[in-house]
Image (tube, rainbow, N blue to C red):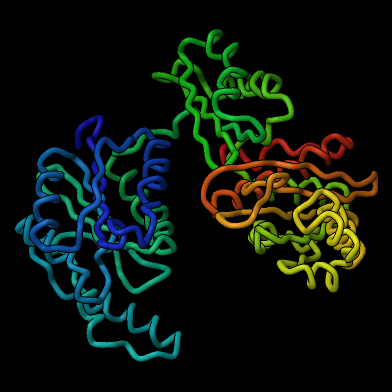
Length: 427
């Protein structure tokens, strides 16, 4: 294999082309491979048609050293990747009783009968390797020919991720395709836009010409990635530069690494041994979900109520009817009442609320569509902050959740709670 292999990723699946499913595989594989000095040079998404599968694969195989495919390894009629790539390669597939036994054992464990069409998944390349699937029935495959490498991964994310990390990465290490993990540092920020963060980082950009600075924006969060061109800056030096960046970013600095805002808030709450409850209207449970996604959050997150209707706001959260009559459900007064009410109702130290117009309907002159009020109840007092966003309904809801989490983080740090810095280097 060449010193700097050319890598191409092919994502197979009609569901990717018609928008049924987002192509998250490319983002994941790109990040993983770049971390070990093996960046992806080309990628494409291909329909589940035999001729297109073969045409795309042969082009990739001709121009690349490593081809990684995702999807099309299932048992149904539209899962045609295995057979068509074998045909394009001129490679032979052989039935493997060991694969059949593994799939059968999985069905036995689930108390289900293995259907005949799963026999299609029991074939591997003659002279190739089988990549074990810990989460599903479709084994991955690997095949080497004329100094080139093919890696075939299943489509479902929960199957692809562990297979890539436990099977494909060790294979790439064994073949000498990977190098030591790239020296880079991830910094998570929230509160300012990309252009503002870029301006904050200018002193560092000017001071370190060999430093590569990249920005990634998602729903109010701006991630800053610091890396070294050609290894000119080592890990320890990058950490020192990261501390300089932290000072420049001020309150917008969230943490080093990829930790979620919810994880940072949970850390702060656990350090203080305090609890939190949530009342949310327009976000429909997304804020609660952010906390329940985290193992161990139950030590500080006691629960929440989705109070979408005014009746539930009154009955379950304790919002006075007079506030709803005088100010409406989308108001600072209602947000504060929701935050204080849920804290009292669930006996928590802190209460946070979200109410607003996510759109496309609703809104008025005072509170147009995209207006979000976030209430905050703490032992030190109560506050409300208002935000206005544009975009689709899900965009506004996601931005609102991030804003609520970020505001909690800022309020806690303002009251001298223990500051969360990192969940592990670049986790």
